[in-house]
Length: 248
Image 1 (tube, helix red, strand yellow):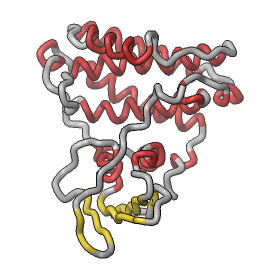
Image 2 (cartoon, rainbow, N blue to C red):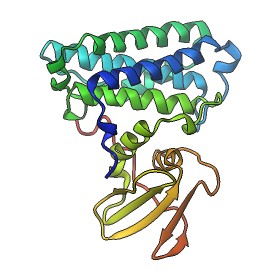
Image 3 (cartoon, rainbow, N blue to C red):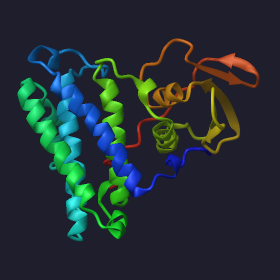
Image 4 (cartoon, rainbow, N blue to C red):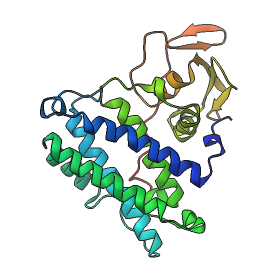
């Protein structure tokens, strides 16, 4: 289907995570106490909320990896969904320096945990999505790339790589409503089919805009065009984001 994460090796995946982390560090370097309180691209969240969430997910992935190396499984977040939400709200209003320290330390911890893995440990089971360490690493990649764009500081989905977009589309295939198929036609590259329904909607646009649309992010008017049975139609409804907590 053209969504196979560009056949990323574990080494390449780690390199992509390091690159995405560097983008977050760049934002932290220029963060001020004024800008941290500005609205992000996520409704109801300031940039401080986004940074608090990033600190939390980095620590959560590190917990998964560290536990897996001990032959253990732990919850993604201490306290589950409620614990996650409370930590974000409590951390959102930190100063710029506090965000730099907290997010920087969480990035360091998660990358160090992944960098310490032996080749066979990438397949070690984790509680997150009842998957393995590699699944947790892909989740970290998604969080860093998407939430960098959510900060509203100038980085957009247009900076997402083709490899990341293909991975994201494959991950978000469960958002295609039951009984439907989305036939994605990027301006450049192969056609991508998502879903297993008989009723197909054709969606055309830049690969980055198709990925951002399925991720529920704002896109420019007309950036993605939908067609059904040869006629232009409104963009179809999509299902909820695949939950990180429901399947554990």
